[in-house]
Image (cartoon, rainbow, N blue to C red; front, side):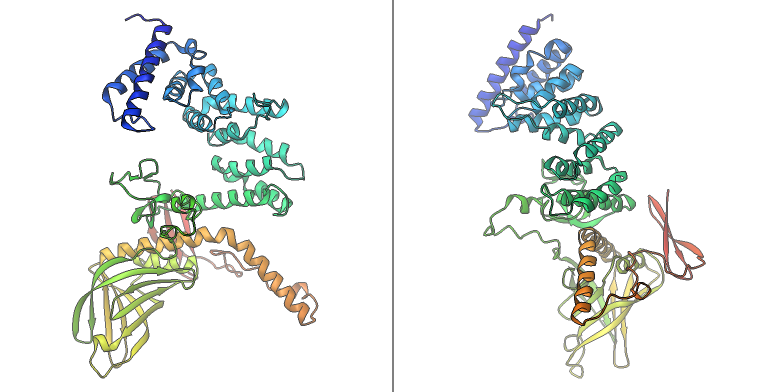
Amino acid sequence: MHETLDETLSALDDLIDDINDWMIQRGDYYFDLKSNEELTARLDDIEERLIEYGDATVEPLKEYLHDTGTYAHIVAAAVLQGIGTPAAILKLIDALESTDTKLCEYTSDVLKNIGTPAVQPLIERITDRLDNPAVDGNGDKIDTIYTLGVLSEIEDPQSFDFMVGLLDRFDDGVGSLNLAHLCSRLYHQHNPEIIPRLRAIAEKYGDAVPGNVATEANGTIRHLLVDQVLESEDWMIYGCCYICEDYDTHETTCTISGEHAPYDSFCIQCVPKKEFSCELCYLKRFLTSPDDPHRDRCDIDNLPPIYVDLEYRHNQGEATEEFEITTSYRNKGLITVEADSMELSFEFHTVDDLNVLKEFFEGAGDYLVGGILFFIDTGEIFDESYPEAVDADGELIRRDDGSIVAVHKEDRFELELVLNPDTIENLIAIIDTQRFILLCDTYPYIDDFRERRDKMESDLRRVMRLGEPAEDSKEPEPKPEGALPSSPCDHEFELLKTHKKYTVYRCTKCGETKKEFT
């Protein structure tokens, strides 16, 4: 069938009218392609024919692209993306500078989908706007917020190099909204090479400089550091679906199960793509009223309990009871396996504590002591000669059948709580979750902690009328977790465990671990 471009555009007009009528009849504001097969088939056919015309279609589509009151702008953007020539890309970039926020946001997504071919045109437009400021039809200065935002989210060496060059241009020693915005957008390049430069900018400007330059620079540093943690291990956590890489935020479905999952649901199949942050959570962002009963439903510090049935033995008796696994982090670092008659708690203070616990549950060693606590209501599980509750230390012992037994022994009685393989798997996910939360929290607060500590020491010395300590008497800076001891060990490493991405070795002398990535 031979048809002119004008005839195809006329067919598009008829289709847009029909889609609009259909939405009005349905009371919908969005045309779901799955909801009407006949309209969708016509749409696919017309888009394909328009794309075949190539650059000849670009200019006529301008009117459709700016018609955000109907489905026209969605069709026009899809066709321009399909054409993908420099002329089509420039038409989309023009739309980025529109005063219509809806159009800007939609064309942003389309240009991101185009990817690398859009990088150079975006760079040229940003450079031109900075060198030759222009105004829109309302007399307002045309900003580069959307163009820079789109460029930043196309991971490409050319994008990164250009943005680094912009740092030099905006870093004028005074601070500006442009510099703050640029610092925040650099995260989307996911390139840790920028961290030293951002550290220097944050130190130079400080929080007092207008534009929150230091805040945005430190925020990007934190995100990049968390990314490095995420990339260093295979994570499977008891996490919030909102941060999971297997969660479709648009469809609110788990892509593994294919089932609907609310933003604030927690499961043991979450593979995190970003750090825990209530500021990112759907509930925190959209339920803004302090009086909303659902506002605080999502609480990463008090995750929903996991219920398990466990066997335990006390002296000569045996029983099975429902236990719940809970966590507490902010006030006290505990992972607790709890029933009416007893609690088994694993205490932690640092990421290293959790690393040791996780490694044991994954198969390292035959027993583990330290930080394992029993709270036992002896009146519930023993006879009347033991009426009081008992706090007791315990140990973990590995059995040949793959289970692990938590044991407490003393002269009067002994207690064994059997952690079966399913419970161990749950505990590993919960341990990983706490490790993840602890790691995410470390980056924002460690510098503040050191600053408060130094200020406290200075204030105390002033009150006590002491001079500043001699240089050689000052306590050394605390070493970050995982740092080597002051006196180097002549390491003898042996294989501890293997992961998909790396192998872990532990020194038989000092216990230090190292990873070798495959």
